[in-house]
Image (cartoon, rainbow, N blue to C red; front, side, top):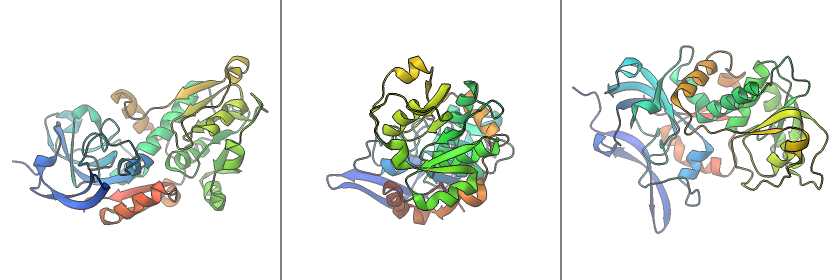
Length: 338
C-alpha cells in the first residue's frame, strides 16, 4: 500500500511563445519521473541555478513543464532500494538532473533514482541540510579540495580569500573557513553587508571593484594562501595573479562571467593550481563523505542564526525574481511540506 498522495502541490514552470510562466499547481504521482525512491519533501532551498531554471534567458532548464528545485530533503515513503534508503528514512538529494532535467524539490512529493539520494547524516536535520544545500556542499567541496592540495590552518601563512562572499557558496565558505581557524578575507559587491560577513568570521572585507579590476600585470603581490571562487570571469583572473606560490584557486561558478582573461605566468612561475569544483555529478561516495563532514568538522559558523532565512512554498515565486536581480543574501530554505 502506497503512502503517496493522489494530489500534491508544486511550483511548476512552463514555457510558451510568450516566455516562461510559473504557478503553484496540483500534480499527481503520474507526473513524477521514474525512480527508485519517492520522497515526501519537507525542505528545499534556493540556489542561483534555480532562478536561472525559471528564467527565459537562463538556459538551464532542459525540459518544460518543470518543477524547479535542485535540492530536496525529506522522508522516503516508497522505495525499491532498501537499506538506508528504505521507507521511513530521511534523505537528501541534489545535483544530477534534479530541478533542471526532471521535476525537483519545489514539490511536496519527489522521485529520484536511488544513486541520487543519500541518507541524512547524523548531526543534521533536514532543514539544516537544505540550509546548506548545493551551495553549502559546493563550499565544503571547495575547502576539501584546497586542503587536499595542502592548505591547512597551521600552514596558511596568508589569508584565504572568498569571492562572492554574500552569496550562497561564498557565505557558507566564509563560515566553514572561519570555524576551521583560517584568517578569512571576503570580497563582495554589497558594501552594506560588511558586518554580516564579519559576523560569519571574516577579518577583512574587500570590494568587488578591487577583486574584478582589470590589470596589465600578469602577476601581482602574493596575497592569498588559497581562494574559494564561485564567481568566475575577471575575479578568477585576479585570484590567479594574487595567490601565493604553490597555492590554489577552487573555482565553482560563473556569476562574474565565463571568460578568463589571464596568462600562463601564475601557473608556470608561481605553481598556482586552478581546481575545478563540480557539485552536479560528484560521485556518491564523495557526496556521502562531504555531507558527513558538513555535519561535523565542516559545519559553518552562523548557519542557523546568520546565514539562513526561511520562506514557504507560497513565497517562492517572487523570491526567485529577487535572486535573479542579485538581491538575495546567504542561504534561503524553502518549507515545502507541513
